[in-house]
Image (tube, rainbow, N blue to C red; front, side, top):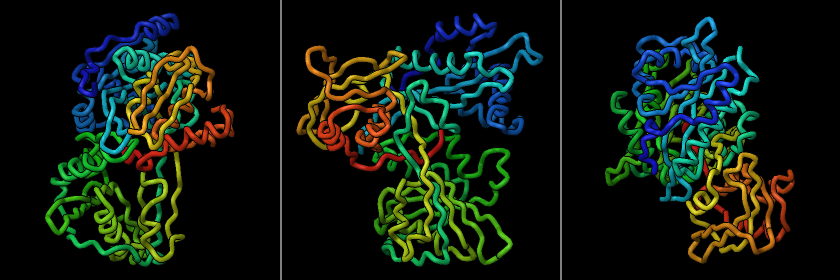
Length: 433
């Protein structure tokens, strides 16, 4: 499923008709056509970025050729060729349990021009993506968000959290393990391949993760046009005593007035296991002339907190990061393993209709789920599609969601659900998409 060519899927006609009724045009954009640069201009404007240079646009085109670019136009405007709404999407994979993935309809670059708000543009674009994904057989859609108030109305809800981490190296004396392997600097032109290789091994073991892509790794490595810090990027790789490369750290040093206490900003730190993680974090914390290490998209409880003498030297700011939206309940719930048996009836409320219904969820001793429509048993748990999407990976408890009215059921039934949904590893998405 994840190999499906989304470029061949038709434009959603419901969205096209709704937008046409408002005098707007809904259209696909060819990454190699004349409409691409105006599309990029609209995306940059939506995210408050600068106009892209020719080199930057060509770099973006390399990635976006494989994506489904869709735009909304107001042909009566001063710049009729520049979209007033943008969105892109592609077929990807979501890790739902260690070693187990399922197709994911990924969405990005959602913008609406400030001049065209409250005209149903976002509703049409996102609704069109969900209808297209569901028709193509995808059970789950996902995105990362800049604003947390927007996507809940379409059934998206956070399913994986991440922490922004800062470590005061003056207080963080290393007490963690000493890794037996070796660290080596790697040239910047070799970073992309190494990032890809290590991340592929990491992401299939971590629920909530998705594959990266060449453009993402080139950006991390400082190889994209317009990256003012690109020349400052450095990388070290960790190899085990047996020669297996199991970790990579990519970083820049941001100079401060105190020349003995600069900031080390982590662009990526990927480690297959605890040995590699300890080696890379120790390298960062004990780097000469560094007073603070900063890293984004780390686990909700960063392991480095357990590797230093003063855990309060580590500040972790938690935020929701990966938002999921279930489109097909049997497909989504059947995509992962579970920690305990369960036999319940779920009633899911979905205003958009995709996941609406009453469902029998049976989990056997082998951790596998069987999900089917139910019409002849009393309902055990009532919940919204957003709540079910948050519960999917096990990163949140139904008993917690019950406090806010998003889930309803007897306490013992919710406790049974939570026991079954306990994840094998805490969900994490370690990149933006």
